[in-house]
Image (cartoon, rainbow, N blue to C red; front, side, top):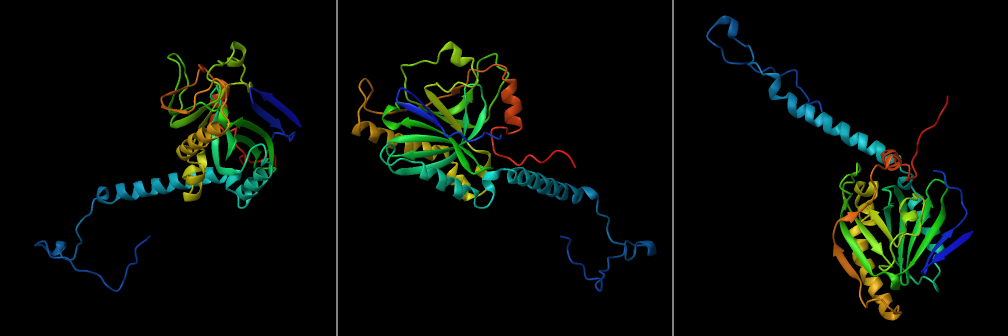
Length: 286
């Protein structure tokens, strides 16, 4: 087990491997139709053009296909398997140190977006004294790493849409929440160009793809609820244990979240194939 600590923020590596209607018809009832004035026209039903019925039927079929495809994609996430989420919550709560972290106040399932626009599955726990960002393996059911952030060090919370530099080829829909804990420290040049660095003074979160599954996951993946609860808990922790040189409050800003990435081929491939999530990816061979 490896424990790395910098500016009060610690990362604990637990040493686990990283896997990567057809309507009913009564045939006994045959309606008659009025004569059109000639013997050939008697009893002949009026013509109905296909355009009167085809578009709604086609749209309904297409809607059912899209819904079925989305449901198939969602079922690949291991976090949706029965009992998996409950086991993850139990495992992570067991790792919370009541003396160091305090009592758990909330838990969310979110996606972390790093400085290279890579997206990774995370379980975030809000306790009395710390914010714990956990990398949990939903396949092997173990917590691989915990990143601890003291709440009294949190000084700014930004939320808004994602933005990229002017000449960047990348885009990212939706909104996110960015948590800062050291406004005086800027990322170094080497950190900006290192896709695996973990010494950034902030973390960015966005919605998990399974949020729209049902009401349970909608609440569990609500980043706006996370933002509000984090602000209250951080201000309370700062009042109880002030940090020299820091303000007595937490700034809450509504502004674009800049990701300074330009090409990001690795991020595009990884995010498109959801490599940062625990998914059922099939098998190779017969």
